[in-house]
Structure formats: structure tokens, C-alpha cells
Amino acid sequence: DALFCFTSIGGWETIGRVETLTRLSKKCKLSRGWGDCYGHMLVATGRAEVMVDPLMNLWDAAALLPIVTEAGAKFSDWTGAVTAAGGNGISVCARLHAEVLGELQ
Image (cartoon, rainbow, N blue to C red; front, side):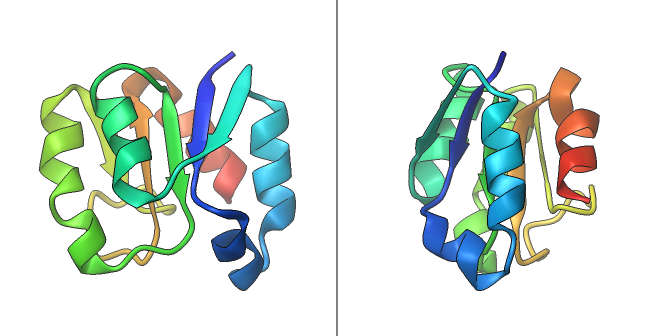
């Protein structure tokens, strides 16, 4: 039962994946919509276990990768590549990384 954060529904609608957001939300104890950096920082500080961002620019993600990684969590794009240039991103506690990636495929 993870605390799940996500960006506004608009990004999910833009990429045509609202059903993915709904499925992920149902698997979590609590889900909230926080924009960009804040949700990722919740993961880095241990206050959330998952942040999923459907649309990210390089300048939005570049600082998150080292911060989240150094905090002991994982930051990747939706394919699992450790990159800030993937166009989307997840920050997630290490034990849930594979499961969240599976839900995004």
C-alpha cells in the first residue's frame, strides 16, 4: 500500500494514458496529485514511495536524477532507463521500481 503521487491529470490525458493512472491509483493506499518536483522530493525524503510524471522536460528532470538516486530511491523514464531525457519519469523506492515499470508498460 504505497503513497502514490502523480502530476495533474492533464498530462495523462495528453498522452492517452488516463486508464494507467486509474490502475496505479487503485493499487495504492493513498494517491495525490502534486506537480513536478514536489512529488519527486517526497520520494527522495521518504514521505512517498512513488511519483509518476507522464510528461517531463529535460530541465525539469535533470536535478531530480542525482537527488533521488543519492537518497536511495530510483529515478528513471518509463522504460527503466536511468535518464533525465526520457520525456517522462518516475521516482520510486527501490523495492517498487520493477512493479511500477510493469504497470507503465
